[in-house]
Image (cartoon, rainbow, N blue to C red):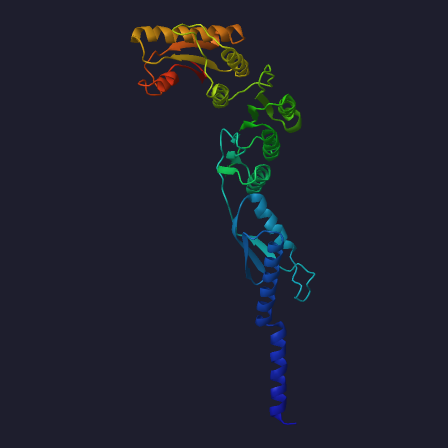
Length: 364
């Protein structure tokens, strides 16, 4: 054979060697490894991480929702194997974490609220510690109230008292669902459930749940559930000024404390039932003061209306003190006709202006 033949044969052999072991093969091998890492991440639901493969280095890019998720992505990428590569069982690649991590603010106080209305709708707002818990809470609410959930900005934030926050929210939604209407309020490590039911068995169930929060989750529970024509049976103390004020507002609602015409004498069983429930709520809010405000319509002289508003407020204070509210925690104030909430030119507006209001404060 001639020299040309041997020359061509040698070139062919060199080309074959380069194709198997040269730069082109290394690049192909790298691409295959990168694809395997990407597949492993996708299989684990870690799609926030993308792979930039260079040689044997897999750089993880993207934005992780939290540090735990970022570290999990790194572990999955390190464990990936290239099934189509030579020596596929060997971990020949190196993983470098170049991902950003979502920074969430720390909330204080750490609050979550759920409100159920008479029609079965539920309004949610407040903080949860992770996207997974946020989705779990929304899914739970939707399962309990199909098509009636309003997410009023449930937000991710750090600062939850412990890792049981999501579990407490979930179990609290179950108890709230048992009521005909009510509120679930969580603030730091205290959980308060308030509301209304016609069934005393439901009230006892909710009370038992609130009582068990300390032992089950290391949270402090309190409950105030109204059952018509039955004495109050409440659990725990309420440490939030906002929750105490909301409880007073809810208990009073559209109900009125009625008085004898042009007198300060309280009248009507409904008025006394309401005041007894307010006294019971006031006992739960022992860290706060209560201001009882009297208001009148504009009928009569300004001086007389001022006197009447003060006298009626004082009569309410006397009743509440007689039913357990410490006298140093409560005071009466009269505003006469100075603060109308409706038009005094018609009977309906005047009736609305004749009222008693309760203001919860931390100090006077």
